[in-house]
Image (tube, rainbow, N blue to C red; front, side, top):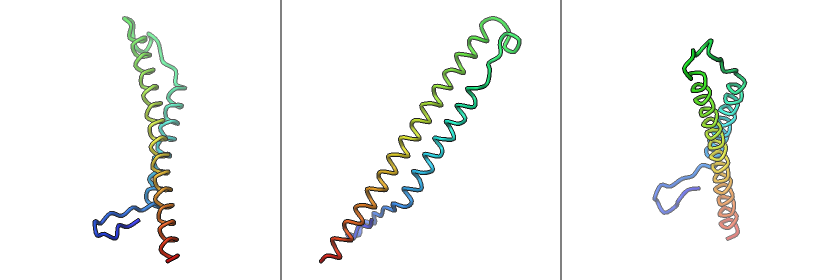
Amino acid sequence: MTDSTGTGFTAHPEKLDSAAGKLTTAGNDVGTIRDTLGRLSMSGEDTFGPYGAPEAAKAFWSAWQDELGVNTDALHDLGDKVGKTAANYAGVDGKISQHLQAR
């Protein structure tokens, strides 16, 4: 979509759609990492020693798993929104083109 008033605004739906795909792929990658890391077993006192370190490590690990889940969801949401924006721009371009050709 190009603004003919000379303001220089241009939208490229194909580039937006590509960016949406990259965001979705990044979300998938982060989700895969989260799932893979979630399958690792946390060691006990033999690795972390006594004095509550194993419990602290498990709490830390759990918090990171939650954070990776939030990041996965955010990347997927952004990908969806950018994809919808690309589709909207493409749709508007098509409608404007049809309108101008009908004149």
